[in-house]
Image 1 (cartoon, rainbow, N blue to C red):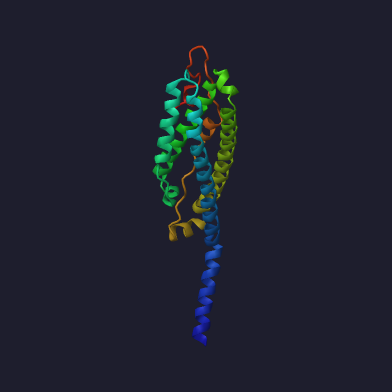
Image 2: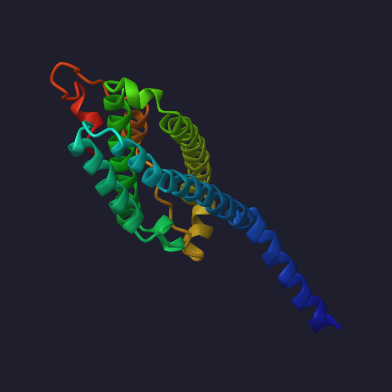
Length: 209
């Protein structure tokens, strides 16, 4: 009986120690970041699914800039070719690559929308108009999903780096997670400006990443 009680007391003390050192918080925040990340992926996939129909619609405008259209097609191909796994969140290089190709697609689509302003018939096309509204809505959802992910990762990383919960992080190998770069967030919020006299973007940083 005494041995059983001593064992129970030891287990109880261990549970209290783990809870006091943030173990349960790590579990909660880890699940929170995974959930937020899944939503980011869902919205990026939603955008990628819109691109083929958008491209086909724009192709109907025979005089449309082929270079702009090609950039969108190639950017989508790169964005969808990146393999995303649960380990991506713990691999800064893989995460940066994912962020880069998605940024390239964002830039290419922004350029496409800006250039389309030159084509009245395309702007009057109901199919194009509907796709544009869907794309704008998806971009808004992407922004919301990314912001939620950024907040979730910030909470997790603060826990992983703060004392004494950093000891728990080291004991259970809870590494800080990769996050979206501040520079990338600022660039996403700045739409490209197009010089309609030359066709060249006035903000070069908005078309390359």
